[in-house]
Image (cartoon, rainbow, N blue to C red; front, side, top):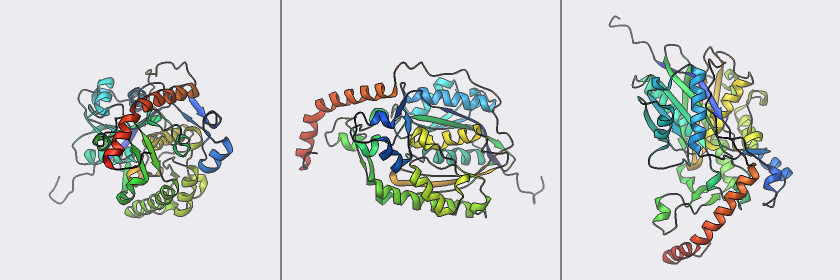
Length: 385
């Protein structure tokens, strides 16, 4: 190489993908057995018809999705240099979730990290892993988006209980001289509005107030979240495309965060994309938070919606309120190189049976915690809720 020659750029190609959806389904009709709601009300406001409820810990979902992504890529776990797990409500805080993924996979050479930006966590993780590949720190990385909020759910709160489901998606990135993978992104946050989506009871803030860990209640301002989500996702999409000199007309497929069908439609209209070029599966799974984008990406590939060399736009928003959009150029391959034999343990209960068990345990715990909650309110001079 002469002094006038610049070193070849390194890109982070997506070479493997996998998903894991727990088999137990909870339908709108199931929810109507304990909430004041019905199928028509839920569908008209969210576009959701059913969602998955996990019978196993989140780490099990991650293991299956990750193993499938590695098999798809034809990459052994031992070749991984980095594992990034994006999630809001992992199985543990310490040790982190990604170290558990390393152990299960046997990826002993991999560095690990967790990313928590709520529903944008997978995409922020994609940015992180791509940057480390571009700079030569690592060569091969696994990026996971995973969520299982059902054990933390306030099942008596209709505003949130109808929205969320469990699931996981994963991709394998690898250094490549070809210009593919993540081309551009725009990351941002409306931090001043962070309180409009608040899972109360998880974190040291609540322990310091005398509230027992796990006593969860959800603050969810749906109208304000809708407004900020649409503006943030549309703005991020336009700015990410502009970084590459692209317009929405250059995008072959939009794979957005699946939070709500009305949000997806409003973002599509705002950026000017034809609905036929927007992938939607929110009716099947509800809002799986950090898992929605990778699961939707895997299903778009399975359905033949992603062609070799396609330009994809991946916008999202999440609690915090974080927002982002990623422009991805797909590579040459759209089919897996291999399959994995890693599977979830069998499930012998329906989604409704699992949820009713969670509701019963939540009720017992909350009755036991009630004196502590009342004492905390008195200490802080607050009215009891």
